[in-house]
Length: 246
Length: 280
Image 1 (cartoon, rainbow over the protein chains, first blue to last red):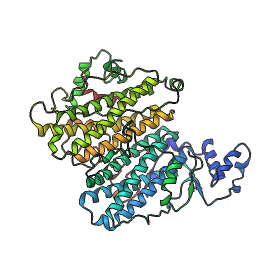
Image 2 (cartoon, rainbow over the protein chains, first blue to last red):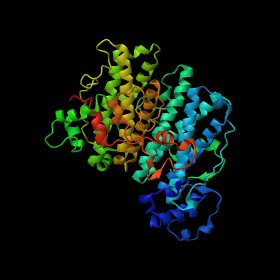
Image 3 (cartoon, rainbow over the protein chains, first blue to last red):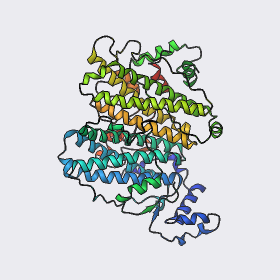
Image 4 (tube, rainbow over the protein chains, first blue to last red):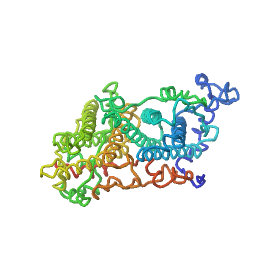
């Protein structure tokens, strides 16, 4: 890691302020249980040791929650593409597909490490999602072109919907811009994977097919974290909750 | 509202100084070359639960200006793709592939125009009128083949589309902050933004490029005049985190670290690009 020189001045100023303390306390207090939120007007926050399930991580709310959420999604994608570029389909793939999947691996790893660094620069370690979430891709055949490409399409389309739906939760403009910078790259990925699959089928419109972009409004998808996490649940082994996100 | 008046108001002083005519502004832009792109994307709009709420929340000129800019850029894209499809230039590929791609994009851009117009009306605002466009940029290009060189026109038609789409992605991103605070509008804008990115990826791939932007490279075959669309894409400082310093290996090369993040264009930068193709 070379991130010791990283400076996040405008974000670091949050360290130690009241909002951060609140996040820290509430994160501990409600880990694993959204029910305690209903007790926010009493003294429970001073006794976080009452946490009923300290082993289940909660993503948190606001910017912290969105950053942890994005970090989880990027870990998922990065883990998938790591398996892809170590699999037999990729090693024998045609040059174009090999290059695209290598690029997607590169981009998702970079995104993952960005969120890890941003989170640790701005929040206490116990509030940051663990860096080694475990995933289950046993349903994917990494020797199969069809299996890999179909999963890639699913993950990229899901990523687009996830970021589009999370934008409204973001409180800090700088983070909204970062999310925008990433989501358009996820959309470029989705289109490229769809373009390959569409080419196989003779469907030259699949890059932005009617199944992804509403043909009447011209709008892409957008879903709340709860919907996305539920949809991705089949791949996620390490449990976490998103009790403070919609 | 007159489009030129809107653009004059939107654009910063250094682009249209007091007393400077539109002709002067064009002459400044023409140094970019002829190309340029445009792009566009509007910001979204969305179904608002009621007009009163919308009117209350959108009195700020910033949000309305963002929507008007978005509409202007969508007008440009929608007009471009309709003219492209009417020109038969896309038949050059002999496969129907480019026509199919343009049809899908054209459908989306026209839908975005309608969505933005309807949203502005719902906010009690008058949408800017559709400008008159000149996709030859003063005779520099012949994308719709009025002069009998179909192969050149085809190349220009694809190059312009790439410039417009890559600009659109950046332009929307640059306006997102203006829509913070209204969940419906922001979300819709993001939903348009990612569609523009899908378009950009596909047009780039149709031209033989990667779907994503490496450093500030406009890519093979793109006229130098389109460089304004790509300047700044070499950024590696994301919220003060340096994306080439996050680790070792291929994900942290300059190429990967710049491809992984698209950059914004300011409103002024977006207007400057679009203005190359606006006659009145």
